[in-house]
Amino acid sequence: MDIFPIETKHRDDMIEITNSIQSYIHSVGIEEGIAVISSLHTTAGITVNENADPDVKQDFLRRLREVYPWKHELDLHAEGNTAAHLKTSTVGHAQTVLISEGKLVLGTWQGIYFCEFDGPSSRKYAVQVLSSGRDGA
Figure 1 (cartoon, helix red, strand yellow):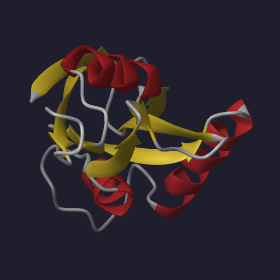
Figure 2: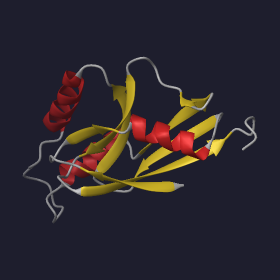
Figure 3: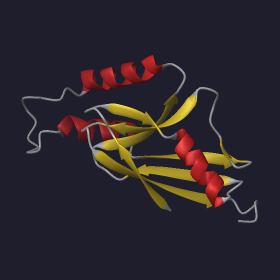
C-alpha cells in the first residue's frame, strides 16, 4: 500500500486521480487483480464517475450541496462541517476497481475522483493493489 498527497482548491472539489492510480499499478507490476482506493479523511471520499464532460462534476457537487446545505439550524457538530461528513458518507470513503492486463477496468467515460467536501486542504488517499495471482506477482 502507498499513500498519495493531494491538494484541494475549493470547499467542494472533485479531482480526477485515474492517471495517478494507473501509473502506480504500472510501477508495482500487477497485471490482474484489484485496486482499492481509500480517502484517509472523514470529510473527503472517493467515487467513480464520468470524466468526459466537466459539467458532470459541477452538477454532482451542486446537487450534493442542495441535499446537504453547509449550515443547518439543527446541526450540533462543533466544527460546523456536518454537511461534509454527510457528503462523504453518501459518496463513500473508498472504491474497488478491477485490473486486467495491467490496466484499470473502467468504462469509456469513467474516471476515479478524490472528492473534497471540507476544503481547501492538504489531503491523502491510499492505494492498495492486490494481485489475482495469475500474473506471477
